[in-house]
Length: 126
Image (cartoon, rainbow, N blue to C red; front, side):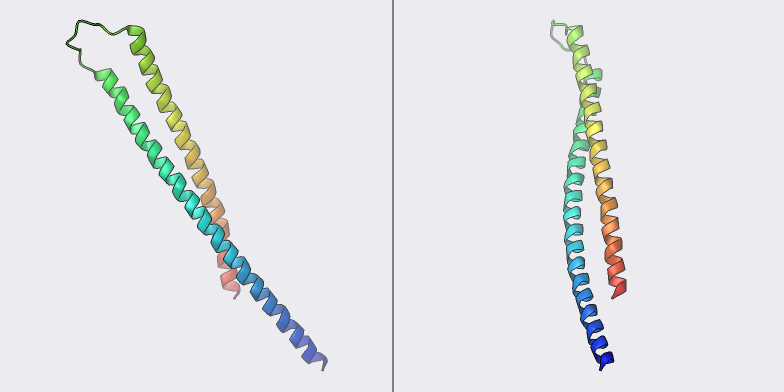
C-alpha cells in the first residue's frame, strides 16, 4: 500500500516537472524568437549605417577630387576646410554608431546562445 502511494506521488511529481519543462520550453522559444527579431532589426540598422558610411566616403572623395569650376568664383578656403571636417566627423560618428550596433548584436547573440543551450538541455532531459 505504501509503495503504491509512493509511486503515485512520484508519478504526480514527474508529471508536474514535465509540465513545468514544457512551460519553460515555450517561454524559452518565445524569448529566442524575440531576440531573433531584435537582432534582425539591429542588422538592418547596421546595413543602413554602412550605406551611409559608403555615401559619406564617396562625398569625401568627391570633395577632394572636384574639378575646377568654370565660374570665376573661387571657393572660400575656410568653407572648403570646414566641409571636409564635417564630412570626416560625420564618418567618425557613423563608424561609432555602427560599432555600438555591432556590440548590441553580439550581446544579443550571446544571450540567445545561453537560451538555446537551456532549450537543448531541456530537450535532452525528456
